[in-house]
Image (cartoon, chains in turn cyan, yellow):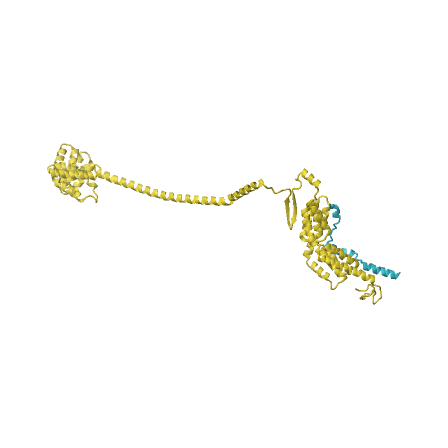
Length: 46
Length: 472
């Protein structure tokens, strides 16, 4: 049996076209490769 | 693949041939990213779009510069109606690789059609509004209206379909929810949310067989659910429940019902035609009767006219016959003339008796059609007895005049003048008799005739004197 309220919580508002720029700007696109490089650099520095 | 440290192209070795940096782990990270990209691509090819999204996002988590994965993620988002998410991925992709990037083409295609983009943006706003309505207590109906509007503009918007299906499930309309979810399944075949909602819709449409609940349901009656419904394509089919095909005696009723329907169909199709036919036939007969009646009326009019003419002719003939048969008619005149002739032939001396019959012959009634022989006989008899009759009448008249019997004198003198208009004495004494009997006008006329017919005679001289006396 589906709980309507619980299911509703899984639906999020969709991004509007005007908000695309802000969304991109605020998006954290850090990937595993970035983390790896940072770790390597930090390791070298130390 | 390039070295993360110097950017040199890496070889098959586990280190960079340029800077000697260890790239073993880095290569594994990139390969993992590519693996997820390949997985996502395979899923996208079989329309497992939600699965593809998961794989492609994994790919980008390992390597944000995996342009193919990012562009494909944008395409998958766009296919699912997530326009803004697609735009985000393509914009980032274009920034990461400005040249030779399909993302630029995708962005151009979307942004070049501003009207379509505006519509899609309006659809997103409506979706968000619908989501707000859903969170209110009695906003399901409003949400449904908004979501239908959204799907008219953006038919592939999977989340909108799912939310609409959820609203229908909430409103206990599983058949409509199933219809929306089937559409979702066409777009994204393996969406977990879709599958869960479908299972719920199926459960609501086909409740599990529970003997206890079945008995209970039967006891409570079947009025709570008398029909089931399912969606076939775009059609919602509602099938009544609990109706069994009856056999046996009902067959007879069905046949009778069919006969009744057939009779009704006959009434509606055949009878109006027959009625019209009969009506037209009756009208034609009435028309024929009208024509016959007109013809008979004309005949009657003609006969009436003929009767009228015949009546008039009869009246004329009767009048003519009366004229012939009357005491003073032609027949009587003819009879008088024949008597006069007979008497004269038998005894010429009886001229006075002959004269009486001759005077009774009506000469004024003579016409062009009167027999010439009749006229000749009349003239011959009159001429034959005229001298003797005139003299005899004159003598009798004169005696009467002398005796003072003026009326008798007038009659005799008129008889004498009738037989001989040139008898001077008779005409003169006729005037004298008129004068003596105080018939002045008749006397004047008679004296004027004397003066006119016998000038230079004593008759005319005395007549002038008498006229002068009458004028005094």
